[in-house]
Length: 397
Image (cartoon, rainbow, N blue to C red; front, side, top):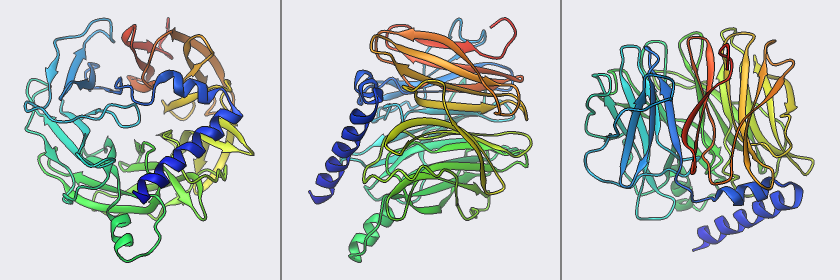
């Protein structure tokens, strides 16, 4: 009960902070914290768009060969029903392999509050059929294994990371303090048939913010997450994950110094450009002002940071198409509608142009940026309009 009381107290403190400083709190309430519109998407090597989402006790998958104008039949990834999380930050994910493989992950909530297993299924025949789901991590304790993220490296190896609380439980048994949770990951070197892992990246991560992962130019995978820096600053940390289970020591990537004993349910976005620059977008509270910022990080230093061109921005995503072209997309509530907007940079994140893309009067998922053939697209699922794909950088968009 003590843990639940602390969690609820933290959420109350967080909601008071947001309501006091910005209309962002109103937007969060408008969208509904328990909405189940959470959707994952990815293009495959041939330009087919794959979309994964919750359909009752199943993970549903659909594909489009015409950039979202029409979709094929719904396919169930898991043949046996099970619990599926789909609440924006914790949603089904889909990634594709170099030989036409389709990889899907999701969090399976368990009976105990805030607990779960990270589940995975793959298709080796271009989405025609899927393997029986497996649990990625070796640890089977009924604890937090949640907020899964997936990425495929240059060699086709599958990386899955998640937020894990096994170390919290161990610290409690020793009667020692432990802030937040931990970041763990596993790797498949055989096309998703098996995973090796439960490799720990870092202690003291935030508990409920999504992890951002991005393939790097040298064939590795980078992870960015909200971290709890002493004594309780909720900034972000970055590390490179090795296929052998060895991660680089994490480094601090943002410096807003937002101090709050709660998790904001607002994870970062990350994309590594061909020149090795990490382009990232994140939410923080700096000097009492909630802000979504975009910035560049390289060689252990935050090179630049600026707010998005929207004081109500929330749940942003980012993609670096090349060394020069970078795109950010987000949504914001203006009191009447939720707007989908984007910013495009043609000079590596130095200057930006803002675009208005769409709006909805009802609930919506977070926007998800995708890239294919050198162009950026944003997928947005809304309660009223359904699944929509918007071309951002393609000529004529």
